[in-house]
Every structure is written in C-alpha cells, then in structure tokens.
Image 1 (cartoon, rainbow, N blue to C red):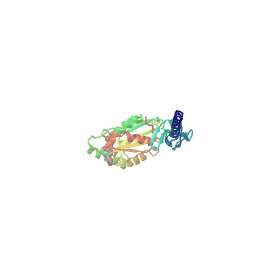
Image 2 (cartoon, rainbow, N blue to C red; image 1 turned 60 degrees about the horizontal axis):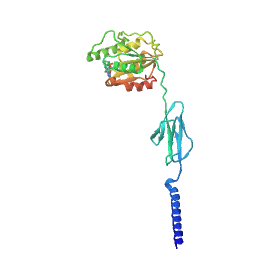
Image 3 (cartoon, rainbow, N blue to C red; image 1 turned 180 degrees about the horizontal axis):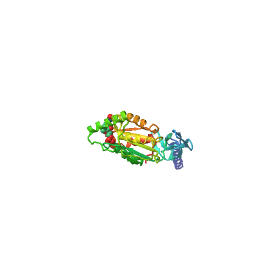
Image 4 (cartoon, helix red, strand yellow; image 1 turned 135 degrees about the vertical axis):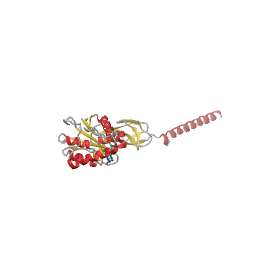
Length: 281
Ligand SMILES: Cc1cc2nc3c(=O)[nH]c(=O)nc-3n(C[C@H](O)[C@H](O)[C@H](O)COP(=O)(O)O)c2cc1C
C-alpha cells in the first residue's frame, strides 16, 4: 500500500515536472518572444548615396548605415518619414521590432563667390540712400564714396521738387549736368562698383547722373550694380539713364528699396547680393 502511494506520488511529481517543461517550452515559443528578422531599407535623396551593411536584422542587433555626399552637396541627415533621426554620416542604432525605412537627405551647397573688392558710390538728399549704402558697406566690407553737389541743395522739399525737375530738363534738353565735387581717377581696384541714388521723377537723381557722365570712360567694361530708393516708383527709368551714361559698362541686376524700408534693408540686400554673386562677409 505504502509502495503504491510512493509510486503514485513520484508519478504525480513527474507529471508536474513534465507539464512545467511543456509550459516553459510553450512560453519560449510564444509569438511575442519569437526572434524575427526585420528589414532595413535605405534610400538616398538627390546629392549622394546611402548604404546599409545588410538588409535584415534581428531585434536589438546593431545596425549601421552610411551616407556619402557628392561634390557640391552636404549631408543633412537620416530621416524616417519626416523625422530626423541622426545627422551622423555613419549612423548606428539598435534594430527595433519592425521594418525600418531610412532616407539619407542631402542639400546642394551654394559655392560662395570669392571675396571681391567693392566700391559703393552714392548720392543722397534726405539720407534714405545713405542708410542703404551704409548697410551695404557693412555687409560687403567695401569702400564708400559720397557724391556731393558743388552747390548744396535747398533743404525744403517743395523747392527741391522744382530744382530736381529743372536739372532733369537741363540734362534732357541741353546735356547740362549739375556740378559735383566728387571725382575718382580709377575704378581698377574694384571688381564691382555699386551706384546708389534717390529716384527723382522716375529718373536717376541728377548728381549721380553727373557722376556717371563724368566717369563714362573709366567705367567702361566695369561691373556696375545699381540700387536706388524711392517713395513708390520703380527703378527701370533710372536703369535707362545709367545705360545711356555708361553704354560700355556691364550692368548687374539692379535693386530698388522703398523709402520706408531704407533703415531696414539688410535682408533685402543680402538676397540681392546672393543673386548678383557678391560674397557676404
Ligand atoms: C526731386 C524729387 C523727386 C522725386 N520723385 C519721385 C518719384 O518720381 N517717385 C517716387 O517714388 N519718389 C520720388 N521722390 C522721393 C524719393 O525718391 C525718395 O524719398 C528717396 O528715398 C529719397 O532718397 P534720399 O533720402 O537718399 O534722398 C522724389 C524726391 C525728390 C526730392
């Protein structure tokens, strides 16, 4: 009887151990613990290449992907959808429990122009153009020359409107330019000559017309960048004046800045300088 009881206890113990083993092996094999392979896909945007060491990894395994930018491009980062994951060219991470698609993003590097030598010549009556000329010089680090009339103008605006109109008529009808104090011997030290002036009756202010008229041959073949300030009128009539006065000059894109923006011209100037290929300090 005792022996029978012992036998059945051993048997019971054996069954319990067997069940425990089966249970353990079942739980190791359950879905959440299965060690699976997941895929890593890498793509490269315009401007470079991207590679992954392998395409499939087990969860938790170290993954390394590498991006290479072509000349003229720089690597911006590894993205999954629109999420930036890393800006490292060689990016290492642990494989998550899902497939992962990475994109290497590159950006074109605009080649900064070589630092040039610049001259800013300007005329101003009420200081708007001077503000822009000052800002321009602080951005490009050039030399600055102010054109001044030999006989100072009135400070009264209404009188000035008449004087300006008379001087434009004198130029158009008789080829007579107002006398100015400013004379330069050469522009050969400069790669670009900036010419700044206020707009008068949709024309170039007469003192600057006088300056270009007096320096026509020296400005032949020179790169000239025109900028003006005006209350509302566009710059085109003044560009026509400049081309008439310096027919052999090489005119770059010109820039008009509104009088009310003259004290706040930095961003506009930087954008313009970029377009005409002038390096910003
Ligand atoms: C004689 C004279 C004529 C002007 N004619 C015009 C014009 O036709 N259109 C315009 O938008 N502004 C006109 N203006 C306004 C100036 O172009 C504007 O205020 C400019 O920013 C002044 O620059 P400054 O302060 O450097 O002199 C005129 C100003 C003067 C004194």
